[in-house]
Image (cartoon, rainbow, N blue to C red):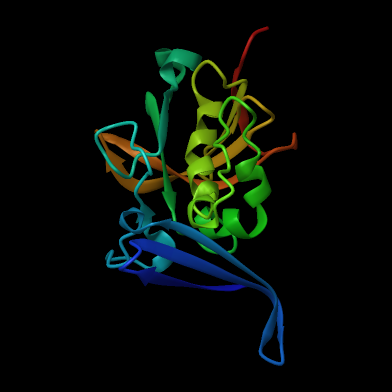
Length: 209
């Protein structure tokens, strides 16, 4: 897979084009395009493109790069946090074929969109509007991982990863990064699933029925 990013200053948006499969006679097996509002991605960040952080369409806090957060201490108890922060703050990086936004758009776009009726964003049937829907659903779907929706949490301390199971069969994998907001580390989305599967790490939380 290869990809490129173009900015349309007049329309104030950014297009991420993914070229998938093989290129034969100048034609790729599959080409997919996704759009986001211009301000969400600063392409002048001092980092490799994979490590670029995206601003949230609607920030739930005082940092525009904060997409979602939940109180881990309220679930596992402050005495059981160990080295984990009391609040898990989640952001989105551009990533590549293996993780982040590029990975989600290329291989897990269906899981991103399948958020359930409570968190869905209506399609308007207008291409100029609906092209933004996938990225908007990525954030709205994170509400499946609110405190009152999380059912399981697994912690892989060797990889600094958390696997979080939420409502509507949602599973999100996040990795701690060298970024701090509000005095706590930020976790970046690795991937999202909509199916139960086995993950490594120790179970640190299970909702009691």
